[in-house]
Length: 365
Image (cartoon, rainbow, N blue to C red):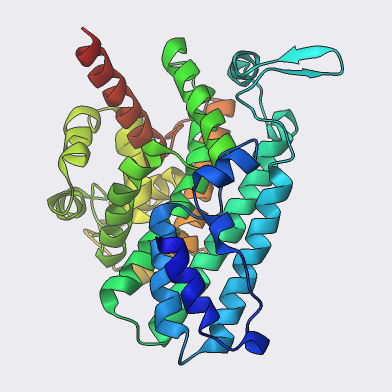
């Protein structure tokens, strides 16, 4: 069993150099599920396997580094133990004489509210997000250690992909909240999205993220390697280059949804790293001056403001740029002004959710 392998690796290290940790508590095991009122665990089985490889690689040559990693996971385990003291969001509760169930929580989420909804969210949801952020930092640290230690490239990529999946899970919460608030989506689908969000809060895992993360990760990598032609600002060639590297679900999304105005505008924002307003201003300037195209490094000069066009490899840049587009979209939606009211990630996640629902209906018929 993986548990015994990890413990054996830990015990190989000198006792005074290593604080023993019951790593079994990190796993998605039956014993863990019985101990806690929730299935929230520090590590999935796949993540545990990744950690085992890193332990095996570091245990002889970098015991101090390994000790730091294990201390961090001990911190995560204690955080999870505290979160599990909060009642399950999937069970019936009576709080101050008020009965709450997953169904009342869903209906509460479907209630439209302008502004930040943080104070309307369950405490367990807020604490769980902090856990995921801490876990993301832990896996990014593991990734850097793996790179600097000369670990096998395949193993390094596994750590990176695990970190990116954690990041996309963090992002999925924002996407779900936006989709729940979208009155153009049928209420039965929004109700299902609300339930998916509650499950994400409860377990800090989401099957939809497992489906979407590899695609968005590939889109991000392709976006990083592109040099958009800031001329017509249409982005056709850039979109083609991205699509060549994608799977069937992405090409189906483009084929079925790109003709929609909000989707195409959201795609342009993603491709060019500019807001809709900046794109419109730049188009006007180029048209008035009769300029066919400009270089990436000329954008700031033409717009007369500092514009960060380049895309770093740091996954945090992906999330930061997403949040900028997300916040801009929310403002346009609230003020009813031109431009995309949803991000590309919103549109793609909605497409996947609706597609999955159609598949479920086909199976049941």
